[in-house]
Image (cartoon, rainbow, N blue to C red; front, side, top):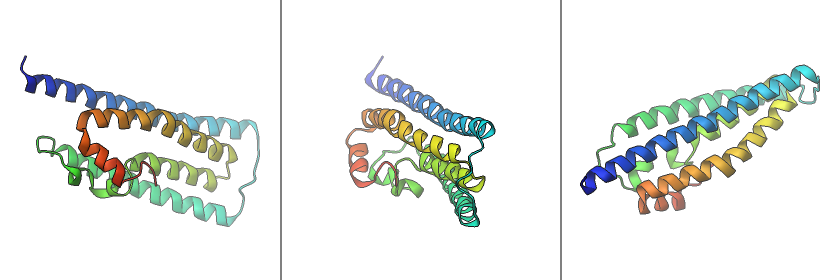
Length: 165
């Protein structure tokens, strides 16, 4: 097998690993919601009542949804440019010019908004814990894979753009 085929196989494998990592990361967000709902059903603790929390929650849900849509549409556009040489400008598109993980940020915002909207302290607590788990485990692993895959271009990108807002 020549070097180009070996490089393509390694790139495809790393891409697959990133997608598995992302799906596991998003599953943790899902379980945070489920756990929050269960705890809310078991223990009726209402400390986030009031129109201000509901309005902020609704705003967070809208902003989170918009960022997720923007991120996914940008990712779709970027994936069509796979065969082109990737430089720093490749990564600096859409919301990726502001944060390296816009979908994770938006999911956190969206679920936090849901917790505020429905007055669920457990959902708020579990999403904050999920935020930490995502940062410590999934985002660090993802960055290591992307560093291996893209080398100095990705390192330059990490110096320019933070992992979360």
